[in-house]
Image 1 (cartoon, rainbow, N blue to C red):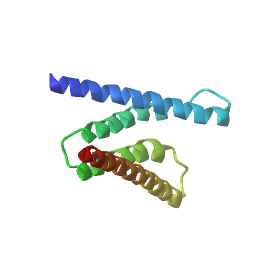
Image 2: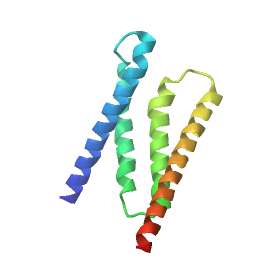
Image 3: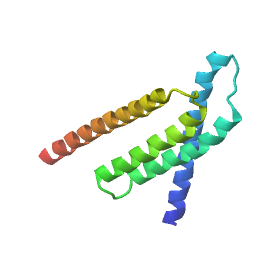
Length: 130
């Protein structure tokens, strides 16, 4: 029963990511083309990306040490976005721009993770003082 609930939560999370990413891509594409559509091939790659993002957050809730969870989440999230959303539709050439995108995504991830770690550490210390 636990496994079925975990799979259900994983697919639900994947559907939520699929909806959010699709809406963001539609809104980003709307002013550019003056149309309300995105390529079918891009839509087909959004769902596996959403499932991988959901898997990363499912593993985040596991009992692994915090650094292991952060590393797994980083690897799964960055690679899924980079390989399934960015690379298939990026302009040919410009390898430096693709590397810069990967580096910027990595920096943003680690900044957010560092802020979350600082806040949780501070909350834990305040709870221990009481």
